[in-house]
Image 1 (cartoon, rainbow, N blue to C red):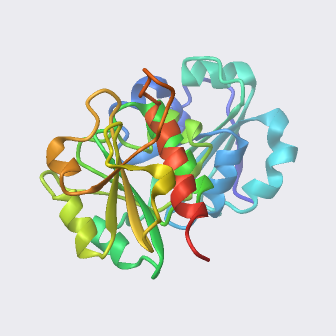
Image 2: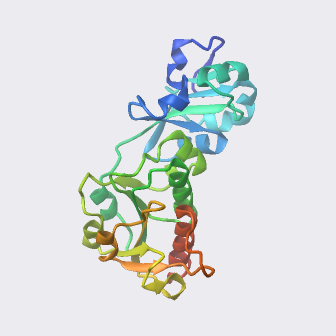
Image 3: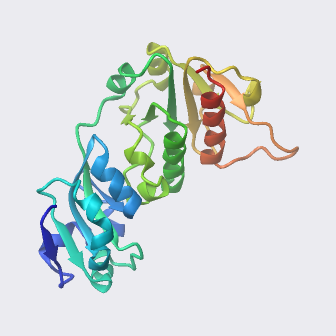
Length: 269
């Protein structure tokens, strides 16, 4: 097990990375991220492509968490503190009493990620997703339906925000993802890797239930409200999710979950 270090002073410089994490989540993260809760900590300890740098937990949770802590690198200290001290460090009440600082290791390029896809593949491509709750929900769907890769355009928020990781229940750490460079052509990139671009749109030309999933498909979703721009839609196979008369709006994570379920479950084995 890594070193166990007791923290009794909220101002202890050794836990500086955990201080006021709500504000730090938005600025000054220096490529690091905050993992919160037992499920996410377990994934952080086990997933390739990520590493835990340290852990801060309520000392009362040590016995239960020991099997997970044993999987951490030997050089990742485990800080133990009372709940009141953890709350003072974080700047709010942290009822889970479990935090970790993680780092993503050698993130792939979008081209590199797509080049490693299996013969039959399902990709989720996101454009302009700026809401952290939606981003977390989208990655939770991706993990649940076995998506092979997630692509983010340059306008998407960072899926490694603390809130996005929490909402995804650690799904962000499970599904490989890559970000496109500003101005990079998403549809052209997908087609270059023999992926059929399938775009969700209320005005889609085909009902989702009538779509026969291509063997290599990329489901594209845009931000709620503006949706995907016409320049993207005109180059994709557009699909709609039929709804009750007079209502044509679903949360982007909900709509994408329905789309991924169809594309995955209807695919031949």
